[in-house]
Image (cartoon, rainbow, N blue to C red):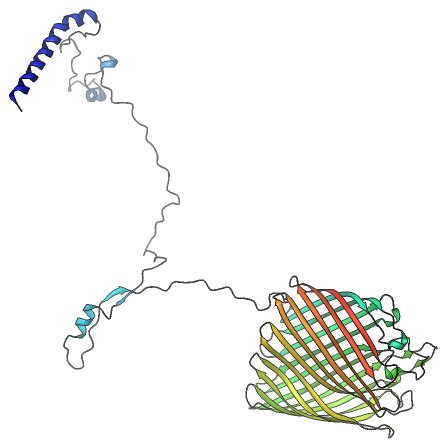
Length: 540
């Protein structure tokens, strides 16, 4: 530091000390109470003796401060109260014994086979027969990331669930609909048919088994149509069937089946025609048929042999005419007894050819029908075909053959002709289904001079799901009736469209339109009808 700066600082300190010394007497006169009296050791209390038993221990520890003024005593603050800390929540777990394994353990270690250590060990010389050196595990195996499985998409989320009855699943339904029918009795245009509003009620159920070996299925339906403005056309209808298979052994099974149909005969049908243009039927005679069959199937590797017997009963209601007369159709009730044999061979899981032969006899309750003809007959039929199942694309059965019936009355010719039967389901996409059905039947009739009617029916349906709960279907059918012996021939078709909207599993809204047309070589038998329906279906 420079000498001059040191001298200046010393002079300033000397001047400050002289000023304080000169101002001390003046401060003493101005503030006399602020100067405490001088203390001496003899003026204060004496320190307690350590050997005096009368002195409390706390005073010995505190020292000679009890005699001092409060302001001059040593003050270290008031003692702090003890604070209890809150208990831990949740309380700490005390595990006895071995510690629990971690919820997510660390991955195990494995050898790093391409590391420098592994390469060095691999190149080390070793004698013949010595095992390869072990590579120390130094790399953690990464655990795969667990992903939640995707929710399973239900194929039919709007189908009814049904009610469980033991090991069976029952699916009941009730359906009501209303609409308009332009020709309730299917009369020709010359008869000036009258249209009418209608109410229709249907009820039924489906029954499916959930058995491991055997199988049972049933479908039943019964309905009634009420024409509000044309009561004489009111009629019931229905159909049902059941099938059962009971496996006795691996290669032997017993098959049972049952069926019924409920229908009515149109007033314009040739079977109840009076032959006079002024006399017409005023009711729709009911036809009820019920039957059953039972048999057995035996498998010999890929070869199957089946044999079954059948019984069917068909009953008719009398027809009534506007002149008060009636036609005794009840006399034409008959029983049908039959036996069927079938042989099939499974060429592959996709194709199973078969041949089938049937013999049956029909016996009527009355010896003669209302027109004096003996209608009892015997029939034979043979056909061959194949069952097809091409994954989920095409499945069904196709067959063709020949059938004939011989009547006891020599005036009635044989009823015979080729037969075609098919039932195919084609599913090109999960949303589109096409169904084709072909059937050939030899039906009884009361037409004068005709032995019966050879009927061919062809029907098709194309169904497509616009949405998961919205389905549209186009339907069409074509049929021919050949009344052999009476030179009577009929042909007709039905075309329409159906729409189904499934609100829930239990509620379905339905709408449909159909057009029916029949042409015949008999005068006055042609007819045309248009039917519109809107309905609601409740199912479980």
